[in-house]
Amino acid sequence: MSYEGDLPPAEDLLYRQPASRRLSDADAERLIVWHWAHPEAGAEQHRLAELFDSVTAPATDEELSGQAAAVAAFAVVVGGRSARSRGGASRRAMGITAGIVALSITAGFSGAAAADVLPGPIQELAHQTLGAPAPGRAAPAVRPAPVSGRPAHPSGAARGKANGHNKGNAHGAGQGQGKGNQGTPPGLAKKGGTPPGQAKKGATPPGQAKKGGTPPGQAKKAGTTSGQAKKETPPGQAKKGVSASLETVAGTLSPLPAKLLPSGLTKRYEPRHASPSSWRLSSRSSGKARP
Amino acid sequence: MLNEAARGDEAAFARLWRDNQPPLLRFLRVLASDSAEDVASEVWLEVTRGLSRFRGGEQEFRAWLFTTARRRVIDARRYSARRPATVTSDLRDLDQPSSGDAATAALERISTEAALELIATLPREQAEVVALRVIVGLDVARVAQIVGKRPGAVRVASHRALRALAVALASAADVEAMR
Image (cartoon, rainbow over all chains, first blue to last red; front, side, top):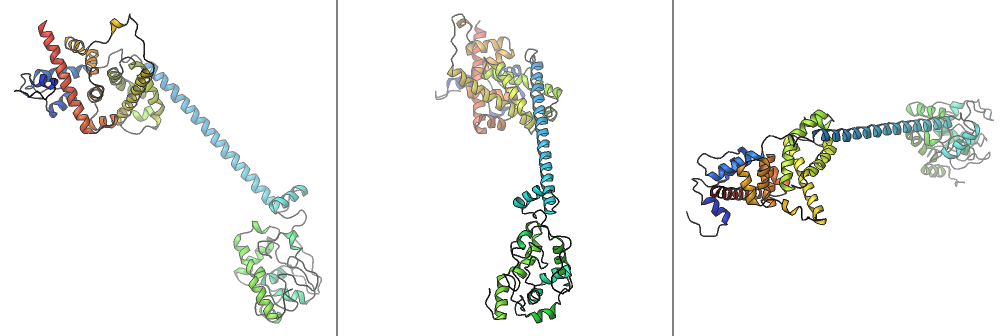
């Protein structure tokens, strides 16, 4: 077997040996994995097998002498990690508890402010910051009886006002009461909600209509007159159906500001009391200019 | 065993250490003979810190362990390159043996140390491949993953390493026969 001299000297040395086999890929893999040389292989492969056997010999005591130190370091690292995780868990639990407590306090304060059960200065503060009812200005449980000779019927008045047909009658009777005083739940009368304290501002002098109020003897609803309104819904008569029950609920929630009411209730009242279109239609039907 | 060690079981970690420390030390003696013990300690410390996040079997753990070890060796080489040690006159006589001496010693007393010294005389890439394949017992794919080469390149490197080792052993045998 001769070589042309283009092979490196190492290979030359290897394959110049009187071996019957060259180092093939299979031989190399067998040597590496099993440390075993084929019986027909040359001496160099057997030496390689011995060499690999020696590097994978069982561990000596010297090599395993550091076990105690390694386990001690492991215990320190794991102990510190578990302590950190315990500390983190306790911090998280404290944060969650603090959040729950703060939420409870805020909710309780808001509820108490909405119910006007806080002491005067605190209620005033809640009134200014949260829009809660002013102290002592929350809707009274018993409303003052109207001046007119009509029998007082708070709930009926509220429902009649909510229906929108009773306004004309109220003005026609010369009461001139604003919406807030006429039994409409404060905060529901105007678009965007009006606090009870501001509802009184909307009250117009007797004989005058302001915003939502229509001239005396005219109904607010489009195309209807006061007479027609009376036929459809007599004053003080309860409205039937789901809307009537919702309005009743809204009447009982009158101390609450509009922002605390469910949005469905507020939306339901918006077009009836503050819709510009109803304004225009009402003005057209009456043939009079809006004040 | 891995899961128990990851949960903090010291006995499981001790078994894990006993299984992997000898090949780790031998691997490091091939690649960083001077600082094998120190590098091994650093590797185990790093492995201990990350063990709770480890997911996989024994082969994956070995691949992770020796990837960490290889990185540490590279760091140690960079560090020593920045701060070269000054060899005093007393230590010059204790210099590393030549490859021929190592091969002769390996033949005379096929001890583990002598065999590791012989493998350490190979070019670094070949020595790394032989150590990972023979000492650690990883397959070609995992070795390729650790050293960042293709499996074909790993096979070529291991083949060349075997040939070089065979030549060195043959030369040592000739020297031994002449004595």
